[in-house]
Picture 1 (cartoon, rainbow, N blue to C red):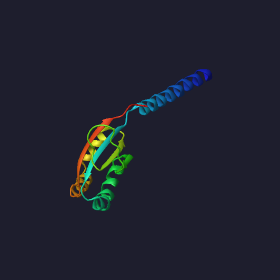
Picture 2 (picture 1 turned 180 degrees about the vertical axis):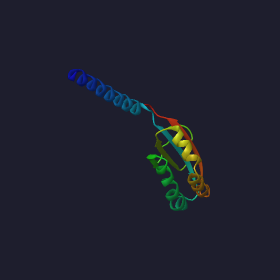
Picture 3 (picture 1 turned 180 degrees about the horizontal axis):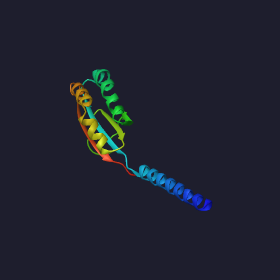
Picture 4 (picture 1 turned 45 degrees about the horizontal axis):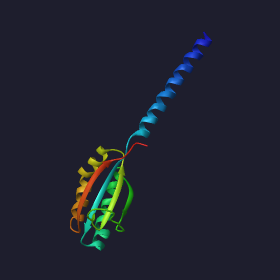
Length: 128
């Protein structure tokens, strides 16, 4: 009886460990989503002082992480993307859409639109 109980417990523990490992593998293979924002800025000083401090916390609150941002752009092909490019990484397209639909983002964007014109798009990354 004792041997059967030990074997049953070992079997259950093995199944639980396997289930956790499978969940971890699925989580690792999910592709991130990148939001690329091209900005044509008309007033850089006001943009940096009034817009960036308001919009950046909305990105972080939505789970976004800044990957790259700045005005030092080297055009390799095609038209210039504007005076600033930012790339933010999110866990999912749903997270991006929720961020863009949030009242905080919309309020920040109203400030930004006084100083710049925006073009933004999202692209799914490659699972690692």
